[in-house]
Amino acid sequence: MERRWMTATVPVLGVFVVPLLVSGCLVTQSKYNSMLQQQEALEASLRGEINADQVKIEQLENGIRVRMSDSLLYRSGSVELHPQGRAALDKVTSQLANMAAQGNQIDVVGNTDNVPIGPELVGRYPTNWELAGARAAVVVRYLQEGGVAPANLEAISNGQYHPVASNDTAAGRAQNRRTDLLIRPH
Image (tube, rainbow, N blue to C red; front, side):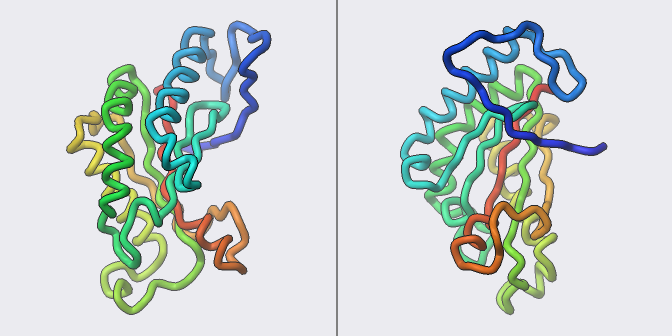
């Protein structure tokens, strides 16, 4: 199954066309409004992290993306959740559980930069595929322990193959090391 995530511009004030056509599926005005309210609630819960440039939330054509930096979620050179990362996830776990209960799918997608795995991790995670997948699985497990229905969760590894910035600079590599929560109607 091919997954396509596309960013859409969401007018806050304006006229909405009912019904909306999203990726070949009919989305009702009420479903669209519900997703918009859920996005706003996530933004309110993570306001501090958003202001610190650790989290970015976007309305997509077919859902919501919560982009979390690896520096927020993980200890350096580890797949273990950082206390700040656990705290950020705790702020939205009940909202995510409610969204899953309403039939939304939550894909947790791990991404890395293109730097080869260092000697401290290479024995356990030989490539960025494994590292990104392990980090995504840690977040999925944490969300499940917090009450999000496991049938609505998926851990996905993009490895280094979906960069959002150039890997030629430290700033670009930092942007590429991220975990995305993709929330979409199921």
